[in-house]
Amino acid sequence: MALRRSRRSGAAWAVGLLAAEFGIALIVRPDPNPPVLIGPVSIFAGLLAAAFPARCKATGPIRHTAAGRITARTSTGERTIDLHQIRRVSSFRIPQWCKAPVEVLVVKDRHGVRLGLTDPHDHPFVKTALKRQARNPETPAPRITRRTRRILDTGTLPWWRSALSTLGTLTYGITVSLAFLVLAVMLAST
Image (cartoon, rainbow, N blue to C red; front, side):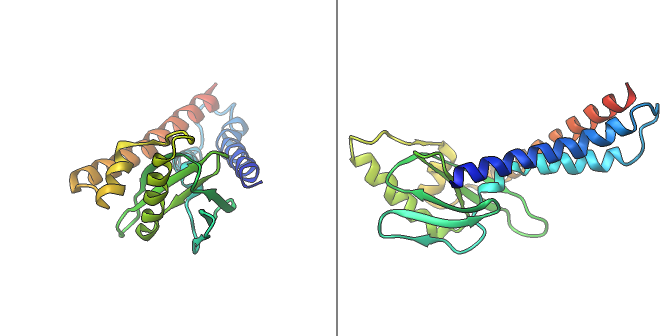
């Protein structure tokens, strides 16, 4: 149910972004000089598209159950993941204005439900579940990125790696924004 709700929300988000971005370009299409409104809308749409992966980030208190499940509220609703059947663990960083960036540990279970854990106090639960799953030969080994493995082992990344990660996230957002701008201007000028 959470996976279906998340997919519906994601599809609605994507359609809304495309409608806001290219709808304005299609409205002003015959104009040889597209209006100034296309620029800010393109940048906003690009930044929202770059923020799309952060929809799985937990926003409220996280509940741990004795059955090995974690439940948390996200922007798309409540999600529950099964720590006994982890399929993939990855991480990304969300830069913040005038604050330290937030490290998000994304856990995906066998049902396809993703949950982003932002509190470092939740990392030991994932680490313990990964060790338990590695000892059980019947369950497939989860895929863990090198960056996430380092975060789980040491708790932090070196300063230069954190800086590169933040720079990469910002570069991705700017690149997507510029791609939206170029497409909108090309569409409006044809």
